[in-house]
Image (cartoon, rainbow, N blue to C red):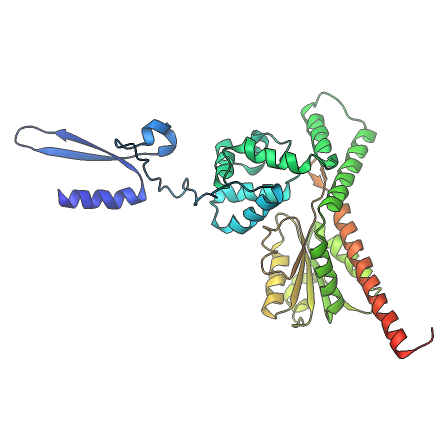
Amino acid sequence: MEYFFQYLRIAARQRPCIVSAGHAGRDAGVFFCAYPVDLRHLSAHQTNTPEGLPMSRTDPETTLEETVASPPINAERLLQLITDEYESLPRQLKRIASYMSQQSDRIMVDRISDIARECEVHPSAIVRFSQRFGFSGFSEMQALFREAYTHKTTPVQNYQQRIRSMIANKSQKASGGDLARECVNATLSGIERLGLELDDAAFEKAVDLVVNADNIYVVGVRRSFAVADYLVYNLQHTNKRIHLISGLGGSYREQMRSVRANDLVIAISFTPYGKETQHCLRIAQHHQAKTLIITDSNLSPLAKRANAVLLVNEGSSFAFRSLSATLCLCQALFIAVAYRLELKVDEIHEQVGFDD
């Protein structure tokens, strides 16, 4: 009997069990059976012990980490908590966290089924995610975003609703002009969101990194390559030594070989984040070079240990994401750098007394 209960204690740590007892006959004694049980299929009163104490849930797929004691006071604080807690979240909740970080402007109008579909999870996972951060459910968490965006212009939300309606109503044939306007609206929504959410402190840090770097290496692959090339073109108008990591012939490692501690690597990447870009960043960090990341989320694997992160989320039309907001951000970065460098030149002229 003692060995049975010792076994039962070990098994219960791995999975909750229900134990039943029976009598096999006058001479056979009492027998016990332990049945594993999935608590997800039990109602609230079924998951209590006879003493009224809740049973522990130890299934690694359904167990949540310790929840936040009280919900955050605003959406900004919630997004920061999501970033801080991301690594400790289960796999399904990480998908939701990434969506929340990248699409924070859509949460106020999204239905729970919309988010579940985008994240490829069951709607109950959205509820668990909300409770993980101290909310009673999804509606309470959503109210935080509605409050945050009440006093802001909401072209993104309006655009998303229009595009969903157009896709859903397949019987309505859209003209070429209608489609063109939706693409323009997507671009405008991304640029307006950039203006609303631009982090001034992070932008100033990015300017400092560019101004103080000995050499600047810029990397971006696939759709981000066009942005990287455009940024290099702009920065070549300064006296900085600029290098485009093109990866021609697969030569990423060779083109990154000369990176040193006083250099800066600017990496541009968005979901699903290019492996080549991540490889270049590992080389940069190995050589203790500074890193500036232009990406769509603080949860991006590129953002870890970066010296500065600039966030930009593009509007999309029919699953095609624009590049306009990212190009605008890069142009703004170049203008700010050029302005800072010109100020330095003016100061030198005043001190030395050179004529024009």
